[in-house]
Image 1: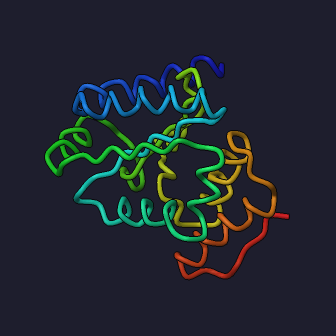
Image 2: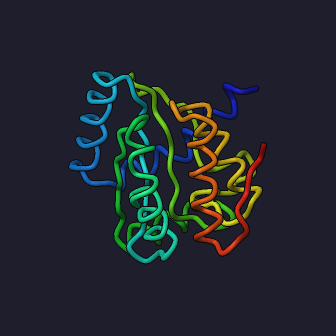
Image 3: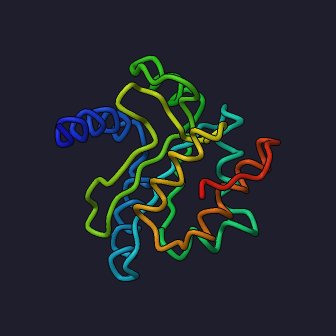
Length: 170
């Protein structure tokens, strides 16, 4: 069942790969090489110039509090789509909730590990609720070297940005 789900998610991603510029493909390939050298994962973040949440997510993972935490575990590649590329992509997919940003994580060999889109087409690209932040943190827990305290810091940074109370899943 898991293999079928993974295959379906890869099918969601594959058409987008035809939209991105060769430069982006090369950056992802270089990130995989770097991840292998540094024993990290690759965090590929697709954003749209026309999406406010895309900018918010990039700022979130690059802010003073979180950047160092992400950099310990991931080589991050931001792939920004033009408004036209994003609209074309959205016309061909049925992703619910906020379609951008969306992201996926590869291991150091370029193998698919996880994605922000669930089996029902819901996207937690930028987690805007406690439930979405929980899902996001579980993925980070599985793929990062972050401690519980560091994961808590990441979760709280999203809640603070979303004007929610500080949160702990513990």
